[in-house]
Image 1 (cartoon, rainbow over the protein chains, first blue to last red):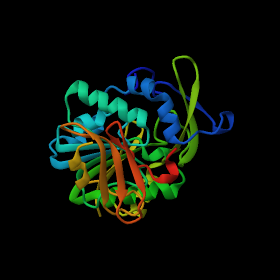
Image 2: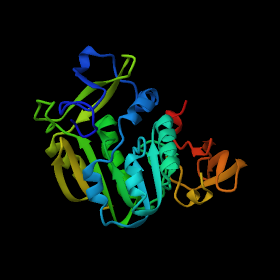
Image 3: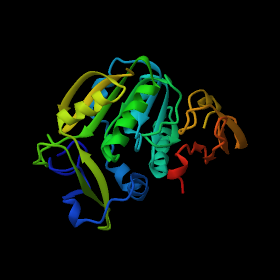
Image 4: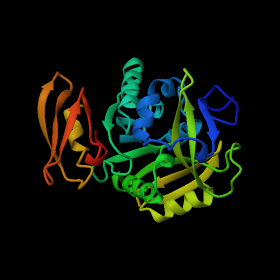
Length: 232
Length: 60
């Protein structure tokens, strides 16, 4: 079982790896995730253990989940922060997250926005998670900009966790980072292509170093690159 | 959105403060309205309680 619970180790549920040339070009993440929101959310029940470990014992006034999806990590964040804001580019996923928060009784404030141009004031947050989202942005300059933006909104002493899919994952053979398109398959068989930049660990570190973030530590876990960061 | 979110949010383009125009609200939240950038004048809608702060080039 893979960490999201349904298929084998070689792929998240709903995903079929295909080289970019065999699939139509991936639409922007907003269109893609609005289309697959309900099915995607249903297969994203549990928080990743790396996120739980990062948040364990941390406290803050304000927490931010960038690319909050269905709110599974915002739910953990809400246990650590007085107020929790979730940003996503998909309105449909924000609706899923708000529904989850209502059903489970955690405080959650949705904001529709772009991870590369955050609509938040400088130093607004003490805690942030930016998980499995960075790899959907293109080109590289947009990814580095979004890391700059995370640095801007983190308060002095604040901490964030950044993750991206890595070449270290068993499904990839490449040693160097690359762009690809990976299909999401809806229950009726329709496929929705999603753009990814798959990071190699050195490249992930280089993009962090090129940004305004200060890097506390980096590591690889379950095929993802992670970094614990501060505001710089 | 809760009105207290105004303490945190800003214009995604120039990062200046926003001004809130309320069209509909209940005891807890602003359900519909507009956020207006005090610098560039860009208008961002609040729809069904969720502020849409996507940059204008990403909006429909």
